[in-house]
Length: 126
Image 1 (tube, helix red, strand yellow):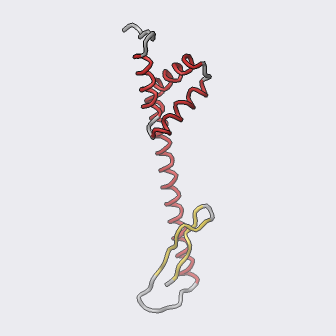
Image 2 (cartoon, rainbow, N blue to C red):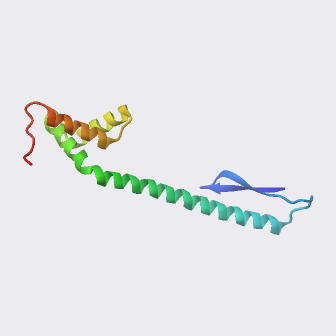
Image 3 (cartoon, helix red, strand yellow):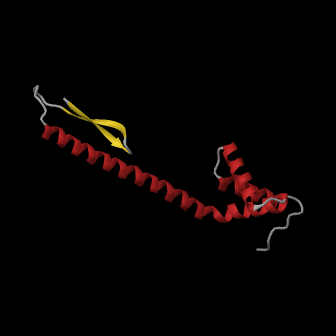
């Protein structure tokens, strides 16, 4: 058996092991081939992780685009109702979402719904 570390960012994340059915000495060309294959594995794993990260980022951006109107309306409501700046109002939404383990958009929709059902709040004409 011969083994070499598989490195990502200079840190080992696993090993690539080569086995032979009969005992034998591994020569330098065998070890070089294992190292080259280990480097290839590291590149493929690194590319897969980068693609996953890009996919997560794309999902987050898609979510933000899909729900930005609801979130911005809730931020505006909180700003007016509680004399907050935009950053603080968004932080209030985010904290409520984290505390209740829900999405910011769901909390924002709830805030807007409560605002529309509160006495003295005029609903826009349809």
